[in-house]
Amino acid sequence: MKVLHTIGALCFIGCMMSCQSVKNKITEKSGIDSLASNPFITHMYTADPSAHVWEDGRLYIYASHDIDPPRGCDLMDRYHVFSTDDM
Image (cartoon, rainbow, N blue to C red; front, side):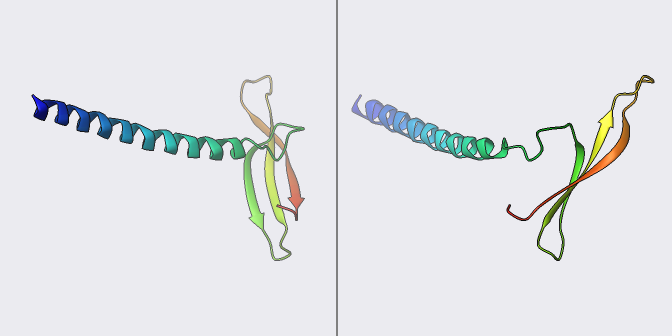
């Protein structure tokens, strides 16, 4: 009977330790997600961004601006360029 209690206790401790490691991974991931929700462009809708760092050290973001035309398809009517040197 002691052997069954010992085996049960070891299984319980093993399960609790594995749950704790999963909880730590979820917490670490949550920190990353909160950083990723910091939008760079908030004043307009942009799609398909392309980021480039050129020789001058500035970050340039090239993004399209889509509109919804009456014919039912997306239409890229213009492109926008955003740049910064403090990222």
